[in-house]
Image (cartoon, rainbow, N blue to C red):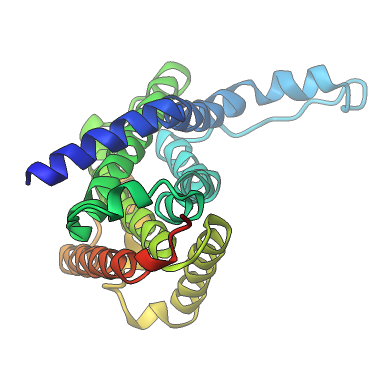
Length: 261
């Protein structure tokens, strides 16, 4: 436990030094703000662009608050996940390639503590960024559109947080397995796209698939997902996260000899 605490302090200093604790939250806040602001000012944006015929009038249906926040989540599903994968693709592989991991590997080291320290810091930054992004989107939705129950937002945020942790753990495990950050990112993207494709083809018969978590998160805004299916998806996602942590810890130990000296 003492070793984990020391490694966690190292990760904190590293994330401060490379500004991840600043720029990742800023990206998510910007994504959260963009959707309600753009939807609200769309008529003025089109008018200012000068692309409308003279005298033309376009009536834009006012989106509901749940539609706005679903659109915010879609931004996180695309741009947000790309940002997280690119931010953490070199977390372990980068240390091996640069040789900085040598300073750790020459000492008695618990690779589970090593992996968990990186996972804990990355998870904290990612979840705080995600929550700030959702809260920013919720604030501007209240400002420009109708009110939405805050409890529904919390349920959505909590459900989607498990999904983000799953993607983040996959990225860190890939970073432990592959020799550099580029290959780790490519592998994480490939697995992400393949399981999305598999869920699109076969997911109708597997309601407890972890891939359903974004959909279940969105369902809290308009009602409630089926509890048994939702709990099943959460349970499988947690098991997958634990399995990836074990795999990542083992891969970090297995590949320690490949560290550049």
